[in-house]
Length: 260
Length: 196
Image 1 (spheres, each protein chain N blue to C red):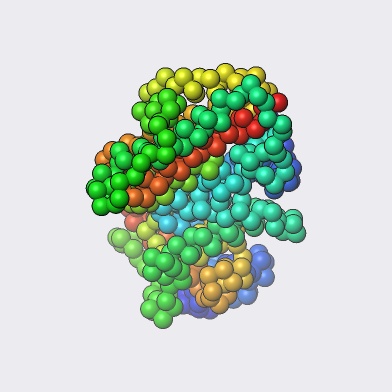
Image 2: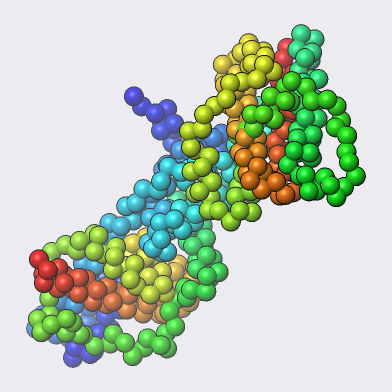
């Protein structure tokens, strides 16, 4: 067997042939040929060292953050104490409690304020082209405060910044990075404080969920608001802002539904 | 202090993930993140792109986790999914998943006396970083088969099925990839000897 013969059969032999079943003339040649011997030992060395590369790299923590956000947005993550197959934002409806009567009008006012802000403040050029619209109602203090302190959501809302990011052709990494920036948290509005006070009577896990949802939705509103400030003509962003206000109103409504 | 998330088994985590428990998803992610990310990184040689691909692979997995019945190993399922995600990306970018055999038949058939008169043998161990760099330099088609076989441990019949080539082609690509790597590593070693 020649060197050329060895190299021709090498691919088969290296991966297929168990030790000891190589053709006799192959082994004879390799033992007497340093070039072929070195070649085979090098290829085996490369192959064995390559195994060390599996699972050798650690992804950045942001990868899990992005995955978790997407799972929440898609409703794949459910809150521990929510009913099976129902997302956390849509729990079973226990009897309403009269003492939380304020939540309903606040939710409505919040939604109305969101509509107002979205349709007036950020789309002047659009508004000029359309028939003038009257706000559904005078923005309530809760709504005003919300519009002044724009903000974001933990679950359903987390898809919105991603869609926005796609629109802006930004990498998801950038979005997460910007979302992860330690922004200065504005003081909670009076309505938010009242909301937090009411939910503080709930079980610690639910209280934490409400608090984080409120924080998230406020952060989302802030984020979309900031984007809209720079891109006032972006209709899609306005829709995101409207959605965010609806989410906040929904959160208030859910808190109302769940108070027993 | 022990993280309670780590105290559940993979099987328990899978069942809990099917119920939508975030902690269970997180456990599964942490169990497999290194393998998945490393696979993506080796195949695309771009950390940012590898992160996106790893994210996509996990998302696809979690979306389908309800259908996992446990007939095959969870890790096998995940790694297959990861490979498919990466290959789909390579195809989208128009990169060859398998090198064109005919363009390469004439190459690498004979041993080379690379980079100087003395044919340096890769004695001892191969430096991991150098090996990584050498893999990054491989043409995408070679790289795919090499990573799948030598790094990830897929068999040739599996690779043939995954990338859509013959078993013989997979073996041939692998052999050529190893020869290329040897060439690169020897060059790197020779360069290092020169400068060192």
